[in-house]
Image (cartoon, rainbow, N blue to C red; front, top):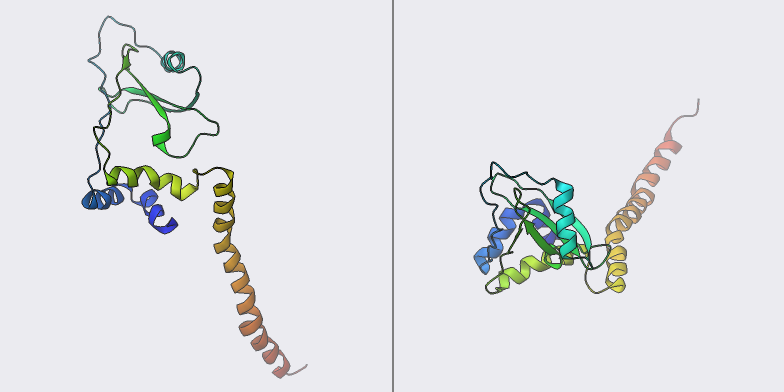
Length: 176
């Protein structure tokens, strides 16, 4: 399970394409900012974040995503709990026009396919951010198993293979 979900972190677009080939993944487009108004003063990041925080006062600001281009919206994401869950689907997005600071309506998913469900569960399954403290402890113990197995395997190999050869070679060496 960790190997499969880990592929998403290494090759996200290829992973998404494979899931999309099995079951279509809904593409949700982010709202866009309007054209830059010459006379208007462009709000700064702090002002945009403050506007978003006023809209969702009972949640914690988790992530800020600046616009990638001239038409991109300024995105502030909130989480109802702290620390925030790893998956993006559990965060509340607030999109703001980067030029005016006006709140933009977020796109909604028309229907949820199996591909959408798989993509929503990839990150929580990989990091164990579902099911409470019991799952987190289990993920910790299971995550420590591979290095522990490596160390114990190395010790066994050393004591069964290397040490006997070393001791035999040492006994055969002439004493000077």
